[in-house]
Image 1: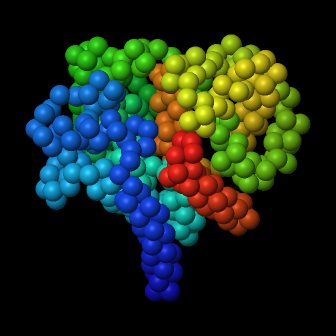
Image 2: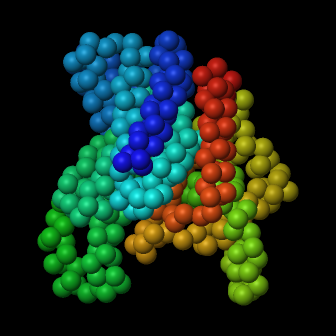
Length: 404
């Protein structure tokens, strides 16, 4: 009973804090970066015009949902649509809590606080962007996946594809996750065929995706030149590892003695880092037009432009990446099947030419969710750092100083 009261108090405080933060945005009807495109697309749907704007790259499932709700409640302003997005954000926190309680109940509050204030996620809780809604659907799907209600999980994952097409990767993750839970690494045609018959909902999802790609002639709906189909890029993977070093700094510092031991015990690790470094030097490039302009407006663009401006700076940029590779290899997850997030995170990022930290929200969220608890010092340090960084990013976003 006491723990329930603590949970209620914590979430009441979070809710008040979030509402107070949102109050700054609800008074402000000026769009922030891509909000304008999303807002106009929602307005078009409200006006019963179902043409898709040329700058909208995703299937507009999010826009359709907000258009329906906005029409029902007679909401037309940007700030009122932010309110609807904000409600979905609050719901995502609740689903994350339920998920974390399923995985490790005693650790659920700490995990949820880390999710609430994860710095690169926090500003999007208050904006008209597709990312949190997409994340919400993936979290809902995972909840039913862990509850072994696989058909419901598959249906929600398919719906998430209607918000962001690359969520097809997480549908594949769930399909593989169920197979591993049932058969581990055992594989033959007969087992696989029987498995696909029982998990037919996922097969339907893959077929829908293939039909879409063929008809659409690629993944992106609009702006196809900037989001080419069937291209593969490693830059997002390296940038995610760079951010991991700083976003999980207390954990990485805690892992330092283990990293040293790992290198001492296995000298081949050094060869692996040299190979990764060689690949990095040839493949980490900042040549997307949306990454090379607006360097004073986007923090990521400034970072990318600065650290790729000289060979020396590019080498320095690799140091946290190398450490992140070693540190991640030492992180313990609650189940062996959870380690599947690593290869699927790579698959998720490979097709993206544009380097964009929003693409890392699902992989990082799943890592927070799946990893085992570290020391109290590490876990509480993460929460404190996240709150401070989130407040800073919130303020500079709200005041239009720069955007992530």
